[in-house]
Amino acid sequence: MAGQSKIPQATAKRLPLYYRFLNNLHIQGKTRVSSKELSDAVKVDSATIRRDFSYFGALGKKGYGYNVEYLLGFFRKTLDQDETTTVALIGVGNLGTAFLHYNFTKNNNTKIAMAFDADESKVGEEIGGVKVYHIDQLEEKLTDVQAAILTVPGSVAQPITERIVNSGITGILNFTPARITVPDHVRVHHIDLAVELQSLVYFMKHYPSENS
Amino acid sequence: MAGQSKIPQATAKRLPLYYRFLNNLHIQGKTRVSSKELSDAVKVDSATIRRDFSYFGALGKKGYGYNVEYLLGFFRKTLDQDETTTVALIGVGNLGTAFLHYNFTKNNNTKIAMAFDADESKVGEEIGGVKVYHIDQLEEKLTDVQAAILTVPGSVAQPITERIVNSGITGILNFTPARITVPDHVRVHHIDLAVELQSLVYFMKHYPSENS
Image (tube, rainbow over all chains, first blue to last red; front, top):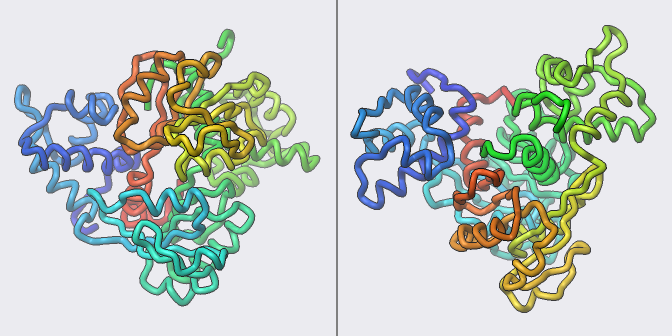
């Protein structure tokens, strides 16, 4: 993004969270917020919030806090809220269906425009307002789609990945247990349910009182 | 854990990933692995892997790599693979059902022992080998359960959280859009599908070639 310096990745990961909470405050008519209030709401400690916000050029004033409108404007620009990213969901099993029912449009700049499945009985259905196409139609339909949510069985994750990457997808949210290999220009975020659960258990035992 | 120094949280988060991959290698009869091979498989850069492993007292040898058995032994002890954590799943909607069908027992030290839902038609069912109880039975059933996966609607996340915390749960994997408030001794990991998607889109635009 021209004219905008990069903020640390850890800070960037918290942006959508901040954005959503501030948008709610704005809707409620609030004009300012303290780092303490923010901290309680988003469960990030105030020191981290203050450091994050300093990257945005937002300096809280003692006894006043932060200007909600200023922050919102910044987040909207930074998260490109006015520019919608079109997303396809691949694999309409339980997890895929949960995604389709999830209300992504609220406070958001992404739109799940279509879904795909290999199961003929699901093709033509509309789930959460999203039409399901046959997986054979991937190449034909993915002409103006930038990102994909991958909720297929792990065994087909890699071949499907290759097909969607060849169709121009540059971002993948991988919910399969498989680690997928992609070209350098494609961004992958991997969420493995088993790893998340194991990680929680590890942290329960070793860091019981530091929430993340 | 007595006699074991704390490793950084970022390193700790990668442990389950390393463990799973090394276990697969071990099953295949491999006795050593290079940081390059590990890096390609788990998609973490080799410098990070070498630094992580140095915390485990595992120093790779040039031209040899790491001893798989040593590492596995370390991970097994660290992740307490021999001690099973009992988990309850609360909310058997699409997302909850996906979890119940997920094969968590493979390479894992957690066991989803029971599920709960408010929908009478689901009570008594068995999904993925897990029995579904009525949400009214929470207090009665959660006597020997340490962790919970929360896949209820966001609107009931907080009251349900209070009930399970009162029943002795000390770890929660929160998949609802709601931020929940818990006492200090309870560990919460929050995975918000909308935030994950928005974060992917942000990183696609700003850090296209650095996978995480």
